[in-house]
Every structure is written in structure tokens, then in C-alpha cells.
Image 1: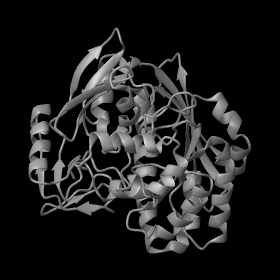
Image 2: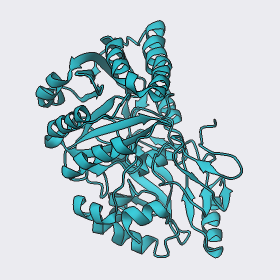
Image 3: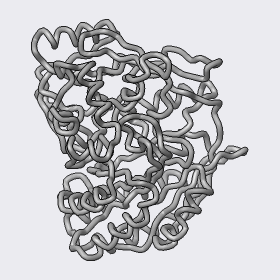
Length: 439
């Protein structure tokens, strides 16, 4: 499969395989001018417009029956400003290419998510994040944006220029315009020491506040049907560099996390009764390890096993209660879950529709292997998350609508008012935006 998810006979499919759409036509602009022309042409033809990155969202946020914009020619670094410590990149640039190019220049983003297949605009527009005590989502590292709005004009925004657009467009859901370039804050490349080790579920919850406070980046994976977790702590280090050995790296990351895990998921999907046993074995297969490397080699890892995911941000103070309820629900039910639950954190930020907007947050992500029925598990989990005023990740499965969001986002009306101003004719509308933002 190419980096951009697609299908046969003009059908577009996402990476998880759970969303498909048939656009009226596809356009691959090679410049901002060509993109502007495509937006104006769509307006003349009465069609909606939707840019699509690599299709890593599990929601239908990128689906359209109008004009599908492929951004793969809008890639590369426009400029590096070493005085301001920023880098400006074209919107279609994959995070992987950005990370590698920055490393060659002796630079790095401060924080990032756990994969780097997505385009910079797709990742930021949906609020992609890693984990961090002080450093937030990828979008929170944005210093400036360029976007093509519905009338075909090119708008630039930052804290000083069009600040009200900047407040919202960093995580704009594709509703305010088509992002064509992003300026990120960068810093001199640094080293992170990663410490991964198993820890009992009850101990992680009991010590969570301390683990969060003592580490710059703390996260853990809990294996349902077991009392086991695998914890990860990443902290800045003076070095020396000590990458994961190639054999050990292959064994842990490729064989265990992708190869054996893939086979285990196949077995679990075919014979659900085996899932608890597989979970116990999986949770014990990963041993403790420590390594030191540059940021993108520590934060990100390959994910080859296809899955479907739901993730909610809850107030950080509500995390342990949320997880206890999730565990109790699974223990009571006859659900068989072979995928670990991923837990991360982010500090409050000032982006209008960021899942961490105005509140310190903890993220709880539930996954199911592609092709396994996930509705019963996700519905039960979602009931727990929403009871804690959870905010779902914009690119992951959820059933919430505009009425719910108006209740959990204090600045929701600010976003919809801006959308009314920038896209009055709903040129960038699709079914997903109709549901989450209202008509």
C-alpha cells in the first residue's frame, strides 16, 4: 500500500479499513496556486473539498463525495529560521521526513506522537499527541499557519497575525480551510533515555501521580484480563548515545510488537476464548530495557498490526478512577480484548478544540484488531469516558455530536462562529463535521 490510503475504482479507504468514500474527483496540486484554483473550481461546480493525508484517522473526518485533495506534492521544508528557532514545512510533508530532515540539521521537535507516518497537517488538524508532563501535542508546537480559505484566499496566522484564527486553526479539523504550510517551534536536537519496564497495574495506579511528576514523558500499556502493565519513561539525557541493539531492537519492536503480536491477534480473532491466555503471555514477553537516542527514535515506533482505536482525554485527576472502572467493566463482561490499553498525559493548552484545551489531561486509548467486532467494547468504554466529561480524539472512533462538545469544550461556540465567518457556504463540510460541529 502506498503511504496514502486508497482503494480501487475511485474508492478512498482509511488505514484502519473502517471508512470508505467515493469522491467525485481527485486533485493533486503541485503548488498553493494550484490548490487555490482547485478550491475555486469546486465552488463553481458546487462540490465540497477535503484534503486527505495518509488516512490514519479512524473517523470519517477525511471522507468526501466531493473533491479529494491529495497533498503529496506539497512537501518539503520551506525554511529553517535559526534565530527564531522555527521550521516552516509544506502541509503534505510526512512527519517521518520532517523528523529526519531536522535531525540532519541538528534540530528536533520537542514532543511527538508514537508513529510518524502521518502528514504534518493531518496529524496536527486532528490533535495528534504523545505524552508529556510539560510538553504538549504536536499542534501546541505550531508558531504559524498558512491556509487556503473557502473563497480561495491565502490566509496566514500566528499569535500576532489573525490570532483568533490561530487559536482555532492549529487543530482545525479541516473545517476552517486547507492548511498549506506550518511553522513549528524547534530546538537543538537532544538525547532521551528511555526506560521500559513491566509494573503491576495496581502499583501504577497507586503511584501514578509520582510517576507523572518525576518523568518528562510517562506512559503505560495495560493488558486487559491481566494485572500487568508495561511502563515507559522518557527523560532528557546528557548521553552518551546508546541505541537499542539491532538484534534486541528487531526482537522487541518487530518480532514481539509486530510479528508475534500479529499472529496472536489472528488467533484471538478466530478463537476469542484464547485471548486472556495470550494477554498473560504477551504481558510477560516484554522485558525491561533502557536505551538512549535522539527524540524521534525514542518517541516513535513502527505499527504494522492494523487496528481500530477509540481514545478519550479525561481530566488528569480522574484517570485512576476511569481506569478502575474500565477494568471492573471488563472483568464483569464476557468481552475478550487482546490489545493493550494505552495511557498518556498532556498539560493544558490554549487551542480552542484541543482535547487538552484549558485542562491537564490524561488519555486512555482502547484498541481492537482490524476485523474484530469492536462496537460492544468501545460503547462500554465510551460510557465510562463520557461520565468523566471525556473529550474524544478527533481522529479516533467515537459517537459524540455537537451538543455533547458544546458541553465539554467551553470555547466550542468560538470555533463554530469562526467557521461561520471563514466557510459560510460549508465548502469544507462533510458528514463527520456536520455531526461534530452541527449544521
